[in-house]
Length: 214
Image (cartoon, rainbow, N blue to C red):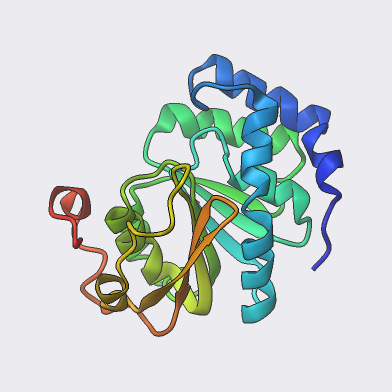
């Protein structure tokens, strides 16, 4: 898969501009824009692996907020297509503007929707190579909302706290969603879809967080 040099992406003026604006609005959390971009670049290797393994080029970024890591991944992987998802319209309005500024509108879509509802979209269920998340929620919530979107052999790639060895992702519980943990790679947890997620998942809006599976 074609890939833009990561150092070029780090210094990309358009990317720094839109993420800088999002930072001022409080969408990125603390830290310099450069640090946020470097963190997002940790997702590149497993995301590329998912695209190659599945032969698909579509990914979903849950709780995208400012567009992290989704916007960065769309820039560094110019053959990829993305759906950037956030439930807050205030964020998605700014995110859609950023997509336009970066010239990505032909292959990046922004949706204001709850992830539970997205998992029920038949056009996306079992159809995506990769699902990413940076600060979307606890592992049980990310897994329940993300797993139904994945095609077999697709990957769930999620930012992990420093020092994590993947202990927050129990294999037995994940198997009930059709995925298996592969471990932490450079600060991101990677899980692989082994089979379709049972139809009852994700549960109705709000329930995954209120009554987590693990």
